[in-house]
Image 1 (tube, one colour):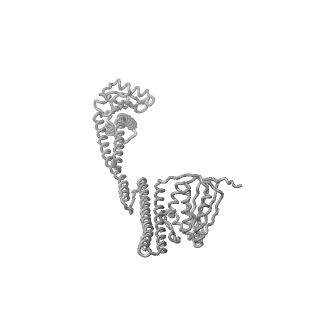
Image 2: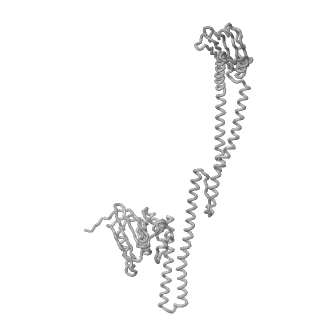
Length: 470
């Protein structure tokens, strides 16, 4: 069901329940409220009559209007019981019509005996309707100037009740119709930003990125819009990264393939009869084929690591010994190309990890340092042990990396172009390092100072090995 229809339905149900509750409350309390209102109005009328003598502008018409507006009967007698004033607004419903002189006398006698000078008659029944009879003493109780009798219906007439109920029902029907319209308007207002964000999300899924995600002021839709803005920005970054990766892979593949083809043609056309040139060209073809194989291997390794297909073969080994063994293989760089590798290793330290994967991390980080170190060709490898962790740092002495570029270093195919030397590699080494260390739940990172060099580090859990040498 659509958001608009759902919200509209809930609001309609809520409106109907509220109006139904009002109708039930009105029906259950209508007669009680009418009765209380009539008693209250009757007592106000009595107070007015008792204070008539203080009103200089009093006329009989004022009493007539009072009786007519309150639908009551008023009877005023003097101290001897003779009629002074009478107005009947109730007709045959009035109880006063059925009382004889003795009953009127008993009423005023009871009023005279009461503490407040008032006769409180019990509700009387007249033609199936409750009526209230009140009797008051005019003047002093010991020497009354007269007596006032009031009679009023405590229940509405059937015609009055029907009229009021019909009016209330009509008002409730109008309110319900208004509620339907207002709820539909509110539902559409709520639906509009949701549909707008949904349309933008659909366009985003179709490849559009320049979109206006406007939640139109609602906190929830603004939250969704913010999430989609972030997703659009990330998708745009991924799109750019994908284009870069395709371009880099195309470049890296095209170069060795071109060389393989060129030297194969040279081997076929020129150097086939010259053993020395033939061997040289075959060597170049083999080297470029190895580059292609290395690139494909790194791509497959990274894809496998990112997809989680490759598991870890966890064993315990001495990482200090592992670093020393790896550095033995780099002596050829020192002997042939003048590189200096300065080691600062701690005590033997045992870790639980995948030996082959950690070797790959060390090789990639050291190769990266070799590629980007400065003209002095110096690389520092430092191990710092603590109780439960060992920290490995590989530092080059190159040009450094700008601060804003550091978060990109571990991305696929990212290379700090401003600081690289004649780099040999696929551009995927640091991405592979990142995925392996994430699989091992290792902390890792990079720091750099422009003109000084860069330090890549990672921390792996373990404990110091026991030194058995005496």
